[in-house]
Length: 357
Ligand code: PMP
Image (cartoon, rainbow, N blue to C red; front, top):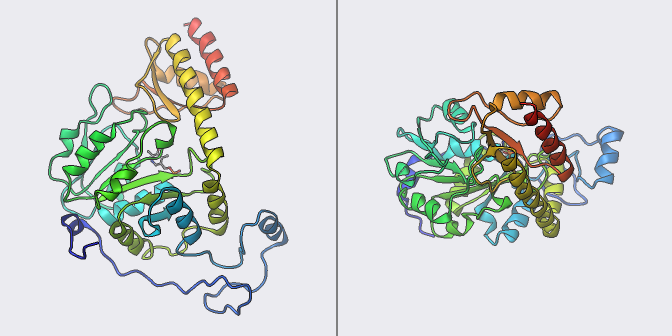
């Protein structure tokens, strides 16, 4: 790799990180370097630690997240130096905003998208400009060909569920050699196509994914991103300037187990895709319209009954879907794909409810 500075590197927050004490993993050692407690945790914790093989909770975890970085690098066929792991993809994204969006020019993202992007931009005082999705909820590539301090969009997008073909993603990356382009692939495992192969071609592309959806582990908080070694180095410099020990030992141990079991991963995502496809048909029969979804949710509007009314009626049944009182999307519901049984309950309630309207 060239040591010359690329044009996109000018926009980046560069920092000299804190250096934490080393965390050797020797069976026999006298470890007096990072002020840990020499006694085991409370008996209940100790029992869980041993039974679940969570690692030695008395000691700090590996600040370099080596086991999980290596497992992901092997799975996605990249160099471990191209992988960064964080506390859910929210942590990866927040750290990326802080690291890569450090210009006076506005960053660009869609008007209808993950509602955390403008929150981070405001928090970090990053100027931003939103680009309207077209009437089919699609990204307009031309909008991303204006001067900017960075670009971010989810693919598939949320809450629309719409997947953009890789040609359009590449067109946007190509037009933005002077800034970092982040593709948030939180939902890519449900039938989309990842931009990961483009990482080899574009050293300013960062692809972010999560264990929260397709790997059924929202409760553990694991997210990761893959990009050029340069991008990952800048990201680590910022991480190590905030909190060296982001990933706890249980997350590391259980995260590695999840990556190892590809058959289970494929089985679960396959099941969700199959359920989604039949729920699409059933919702359409009930008078709902929606953009085609490649995610684990459907963004549906009813032809006659306002979304808010349906949302409240479902809530009374303890069926929770998502509704936003926001321009453009206030007549839509985002319905997550649950088990077949859960979706049967939803559909049969909607049938009865809508028949009475
Ligand atoms: N990106 C998108 C588009 C999302 O919808 C979500 C889920 N709220 C996330 C990132 C963050 O997910 P997590 O922090 O659980 O990985």
